[in-house]
Image (cartoon, rainbow, N blue to C red):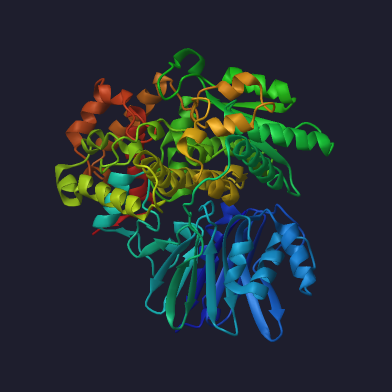
Length: 614
């Protein structure tokens, strides 16, 4: 994994702008701590920070290759999981290779097939290819949106980067947010509208899309989207196909020239990945697979089972690790670390995020990075197979509100009346909600109940899954750890998308078809375990800590946060007990303590990024 950035300009001589490119590239150093590279011509400047995973000696970037009298230069962030097949196909076409990196294979694939190469790729990626002779830039992002990519146009220039900070390092890009940006942060946050860059004039290349920029302008094309069709396989065939796709995706993603490990919570998804990885390590005689789990000081005393978190992970982690003989590492954090790392999480995401849910992941990834460079995680299985509680309550889709943002009224209480009146939160959320529903690819003749389930899946793919992928990428890459997500393999998503709900929930359990596919692979108790989300701290000392930090902010007249909140309401929340601390306002994990921490992150963000509101 890496960080990429670039600048195309039709007026300035970019060979005189090396300092600006160096700033845009250097600010992505955490994404690529192993090497830095730049390529500059009068019209194009490309920058790259490298995290070496495949072919450490031969995969340097920007990488250039000639075909006849044409020169192509690539900057690439990601991983291809079908590199070997592509290299063989290209060899048949007459190409040879100097190394074994997927970067060289990807660039050669583009030279041979042009934009159509995207249809052949299995992987996670964001990349740009500049054609010096054509004076044209091609950008593309993977189907699921695992790897990020932002861009902006200013007069005669075009800028792009893996993260917002790369664009903000350019002198022409100002950290300004307007009415729509305010709505993104305060209404939808920590989610974000797909394609929206929050800062004025910055956009995100959406998943499954590619872009061409040349002197004629910019054209965006969607090269992949979900297709709805009748599911014709019976239960047994479906089970076998799901098992085959899942196992193949995990095995493909174990390939690396650096140490690989897995996240392990003892839940269905991480245990499945660990099972396949452990078997692979045993067969390859690589020794024991290393696994990691996270917990928090005091959770052994303060955890209370709830509808959203029915049990803690510790006992299940021990059971799965013992069953597969992994070398397991327990990582535990205390309240001071959680509170202090809120700032670092904001800088990693470039925006206010999921508060300590983000920062704990960042700390967790930092510990893993001490021994490993690549980890596999069970992210997105719940979106793909239907694991969240809201999948089971789609009777009325005409709500105008995303199911993971059910208590927007609670959230709006903390903001100033002027801000709420200005942004019209219910209207903005309803607009985004119904836009997404309208885009859901319908299946003609499908019964209304199944059609509603399909809409719920579509909402999750384009919103909740994107939020979690955004979180996973930023927090892991902030410390130079590559995290792979096998359940995001597009072949799995395409197949499971059309499996009917009664089959997805066979056995009367969420993700029933996945549980059925894992029979005989995992211990029976793990297969029957109810979903429990990523752990968070339940220690009351954390609530006390964020209350204290927020009170200090409220007492600082220079705080930019004071302009956007209802100070009296927030102060009351900091000083008294309140039942809002028990209700989730985003997802399953973000309750009262996380609401206060989110406000702290807003203050950090506005200060650190010198955000201006128009």
